[in-house]
Length: 241
Image 1 (tube, one colour):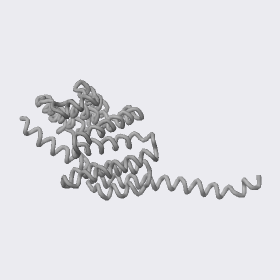
Image 2: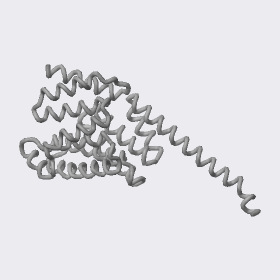
Image 3: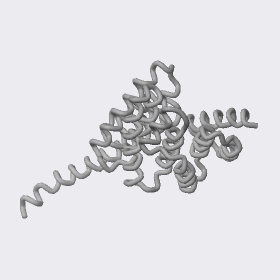
Image 4: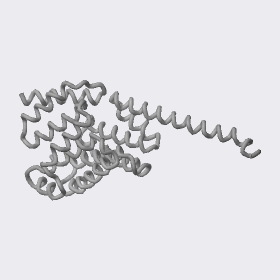
């Protein structure tokens, strides 16, 4: 009993330090997220990765993939590879982090656009596996269903790549159900409708794409990325009228 009483201050101190550490990590994660939301993707990725947590590394992957849209084409591939590495580390730290699987899939999808057909198809297969894992962990992850919709739309198209894409499972019939599920989960997220429009355009359905874009441009944009998406949606909609 004496030992328990004697060591109680140390136990209290340890618990206090643990709690403070958790608060500090949460605040640092929020700070990194704020940097990313403002468009400072490089600073966000650095700050998030420095946390060395699964959640932080997933954000670092997201920021790196997002930032690749703002750099020259010859710099994109290395950023997508870097994003993959962040996401893989996030999964290693927490195999149940749905965001990490989603970010790995997103980076793989972007990278597939910058490699040859025979390199892109294995990436497409891995992307599908990671998206399926993300939705298995979190069935309400709308972004993953958007990505699955795009995955099917981009792989089930004409030509050699389309034939190979269908061989790994890309199906036109799975495009609309995935997008509709995403929109049902998050009806006020513009990017879901914008990506649906992009998928519809790959199928030559301009009228349906315009309907989705018309809805997308009515949704408010708060972050740097949302405003950028909104501007792109308005520009694309103008070409369809």
